[in-house]
Length: 262
Image (tube, rainbow, N blue to C red; front, top):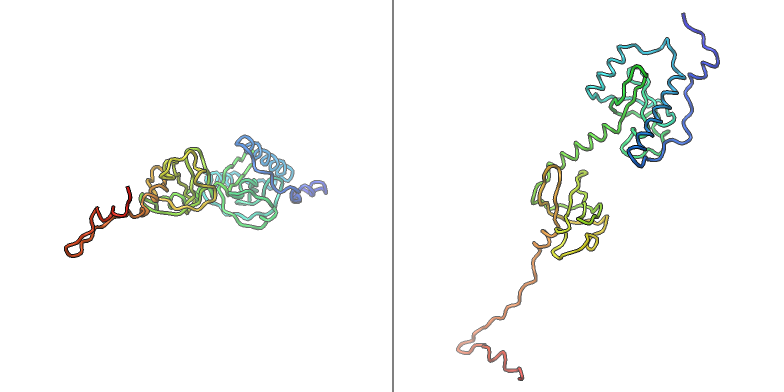
């Protein structure tokens, strides 16, 4: 027998309005990030408790399937239905799922409302039947795909290749250079110039486009050199004096010195 809902109960079932502040500022540390994520979870739990109706509770079989998908790292595709405080709501197997704002993308999400109605692919990162907590992450999936693409590109580089890149950061010991495909390499300070320098900033600046030679690719790390290319450039031609003979006469040392006064 269905239970008649009072106006007060009906009101709790209505979708909440989107948060005035779509997403919090990026966390400055892992501790801040964990605290920020937990706050998002609490907001989701509070909303779920307010809208949960016992007669419509998902059964154990659905949760079992969800947990198996989590264990298998199944990629799920869901549609974002609405925006709530700290994240977005989607549905997976008729279960309400929460995607924290920090897990929607690799970058910072400035306007959460722009995600409404979008389809995303994600991993299940939390599936807790007792707490009725189902959390998804597109960020984890995107990070894996980015790393796979980086490793694939890394495999295409080999020692001896001459490539172009952009100086990313300067350290006392050298310069990190971004190559194609999200691959980064290090030009050690001893490999920047044929001249001895005290700091990479003497020769390079961040954002500068440079050409480098790959010295080695080992354990996912690329060692680069600018000096190797500089030493390959043609040197200034040496000047030679030639002595040419004309018949019986020839140009000798005396002729070269005759105009000099001692």
